[in-house]
Length: 343
Image 1: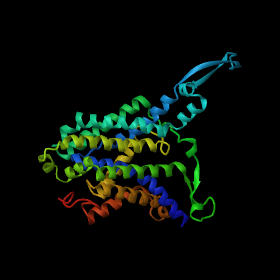
Image 2: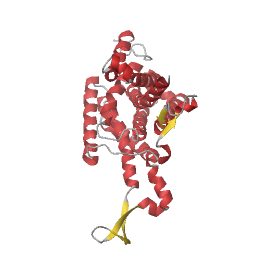
Image 3: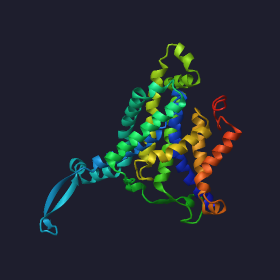
Image 4: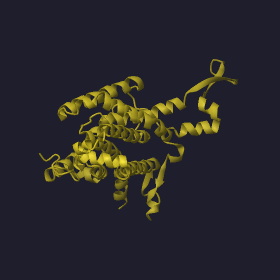
């Protein structure tokens, strides 16, 4: 029983990342009808926003301590971060320690701006082109962004730790009445799951309860009719592209303590997230979220040693096997609209 609970927890945090990326992909496809293969790159850029903020906050100046000598007999050089000079040692150290959560404030405007530039500068020219063209151009854009990050940040993963308060693990089993140290789970993964739930809930609330969101949903259902009412639906869809980019970026920011950012991390998630979107139903936001968590949990169970002993390599293919089965039985996906993907 404890192993089952642990795998569910593992699946929830992995599914959180899938759901957040798939949510943005679905928003873009549902509003603009674009298959955006550069969406994984937005996740990666979000992660590097956290790296950038950490580096900026860690910028230091050098002072000499004449009371201490190095091996050459010179005064020892001491690096002191500027934030510690400006805010004091304790507050400055706390700001650096909390650089990942603080990066959210930095990433939101950056990601929205990148989304606007991508949509207005490139993707809008491919709205009426075949999906194959859209895939090629966005895939090429993803490679360009990936190489830019590699050029400026290097090819190696860059560690970006979580705040001290969330390092270590939590004895989750004791909450459920198990013996101590039976179900141990990292704090930050719980934080990531809670963060994903808040973001997903916020996006759904925005679409459900605001006038802007209602118009966007109406446009997703019937774009031409909304346009005939005199509403500039294209501008609203552009804003939704920026929102989708921000969601992907925030997913990347908070994922950095779990997986050290590297230039190809977006590609690692992109393919799986597309499978999640197709399984959930192209254009279906609830379907993307549900499929993200479902496939995350299934992947987690498939990675158990007992399962892999029965079917070697199943953890690498389980998502694709489930996708094949679901699409054979229900071509529109779990919660997809009738007619989509059924032609």
